[in-house]
Image (cartoon, rainbow, N blue to C red):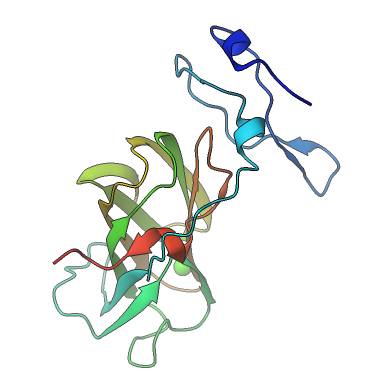
Length: 200
Ligand SMILES: [Ca+2]
């Protein structure tokens, strides 16, 4: 299959890779917001080999937390080399951290492979919020069961942006994941390869 790229200028339709849901319906991912210009069909560039950035992951800080507004002052423990894709279920994230009423702050930098408007999605139980380049991209920092939340931000390829993800666990199940997608970036968990420790 081939396309004449120029022919896509101004068109409303585009080619897009998709997967199948368990019930047999197609999963097209997330729609791009209206008025966002797409230069080439995402299905064409989605298979482009991705260069490894050599990211070493974020720094995770673990806190105990009472109530719904943790102070994030004194971490009980710190771990490097993280991305945000964990399902603690009923367990604790660290041996010195309680299994309920804890909070996690991931700090570092994110480096996108492509320029474009990104859809970020979290899937978390309980609360989560995401800040990129000091912009509040996702704010679902409240008690609740596992749920998806989305936000948008424009990022430039190969630039490193400050990233902070705050997570809140009240009780019972605990999990947190961070995904991204753009016209060129297939939907996936943001990989460790594109994440780095804080700059200073
Ligand atoms: Ca919970």
